Image 1 (tube, chains in turn cyan, yellow, purple):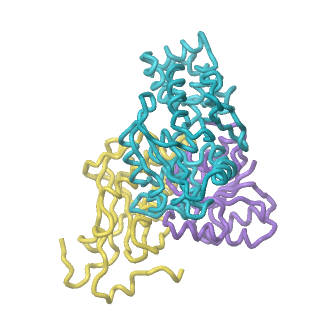
Image 2: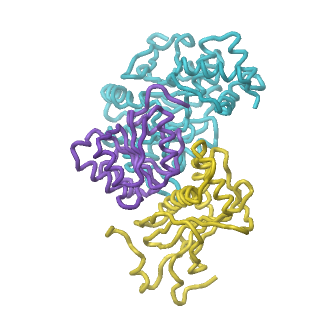
Image 3: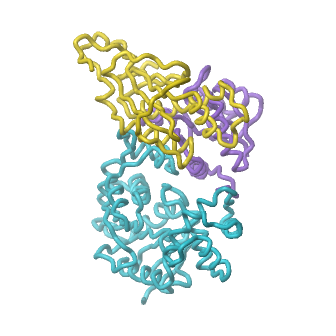
Length: 274
Length: 173
Length: 127
């Protein structure tokens, strides 16, 4: 345990102020586990040194990075459900009205982890649109080959389906497979998974109507964030929609996006003329 | 519940499945690991290494009644069961554990493991309330799926065992 | 906010109540469905009921049906918390009137996720 009491207390206070979440004493290991990847990314060997460097010269970017890393959990289904509500209430109706009946909409889940995000999108569309599989395709990508394989398999443990998946959706879209749950074949057919490193030039994909790029940018420095946002925009339709993590924004990073409020969530749309 | 197959009417039939055709040790292990991670503690692991159960041992179990009928039995040393109880209760553990506390907590672990084993088997089946004491006898050695593990270095076994004797002419092993 | 925790295992009642109290809930406990109904009939009406399935005297499914049959309890949100985990069992519980279904084993994080889905997670959350 390299985390000092001073560092932990400062992180606790910061997270509480920014998110209303209380980190209780004894959760030092959580702070270590979540912040170590960021520290390493910045070439800092331990979490306390990293926290001290942010504390001595805090910037909105660096403090947000800490808050975000401690308050997101990539393995939940509907955690922070507003970007999903926005999809069915606003984004899909607008896109379906704007496109021809034979045009297939393309959605990109750009950091799909073990598949919870792309399958959450697939379930919502299946429930909202008749013949969803013929109207929409979902591209799921992740840096990790293991995560891509898990997404393709579409199998989840009991503990995983307990994480924020509404029971009515579980019984509608999953079947038991031994000790696991398997997502329905028609949902798996909507999702294509492949490896993709967002920090490098992207493969030919899209053009995408909707992109979910949530809780990814926090792990990168400003120039890399800018490069990622530029590359993502190049793969999007001019009237497309981008969803970021709740504490992420394009503001102050890349000014070629327009921030729009969608229900209780925010989305970003490419600015014309960029 | 009238949609539950009690297994009784199968006694006159030609065949009934034995547990090894329905579930394997790896599945039982993953069920047990999930239960330990969630209930006992995030860092608690079960090593799939057999150890010898000696001295004062205790079992907890639940019955599964359905297309396959049998019992899911957890067996370990009494001290280990007490350790599991403390881990399960965490901050809520009393200073002095009573036998009743151990029976309750060890029984609940059997309920959690047993419920998930039941769900991995063909259904519909009914699950009994947990019981604690001396393990029910094995009725048919061919109808047992047994997992031996070490928790914190102490041996513990999970046995999914049929409640019915072998059918005449069925293979014995 | 208030929650009634019904489970025949004392250990499980303590675990569930502990999570809820950590989130600021006031809790009461009952050892089976009949005891749970007695708490409600006594006038202690919580926002949330967490109820196990397999219990002596009155099981969780009977409890859900009894609560749903009483218009006075229309406001109650019910979550089954049980090791019963077949597809068909979850469908039965939802059809009987449970709003959510938590499969044992679960983590405290999973519990918070379910409360968030139900709109019953207090604003200030302990992580």
